[in-house]
Length: 127
Image (cartoon, rainbow, N blue to C red):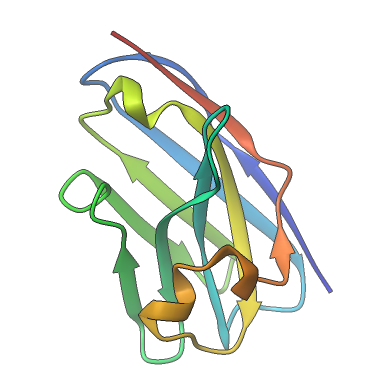
């Protein structure tokens, strides 16, 4: 069992930055895929980024490439999302996710692939 808790959301102006953190309790991440999804009001959950510790592979959605950076510390059981150059369309609730084992990209981008979800942290970007 893995329990995920996000933090770091808030209100920021367009062009600003935020760093989201996800702390995990339970078993280690060492063989998991962990990442971030987001959901804006009235929209489906959207893949943002993921890291697969096995093979140290990182995936990004096109909307995140060049602006967001996912990183993690397996020893601390933590994963982070550094978000720069934020846009109003980045406004959403951001969720930390985890799945036992490595995932290829086509699976890592699917919400249904993940077994564990945090409660979410709200990010609001004002124009």
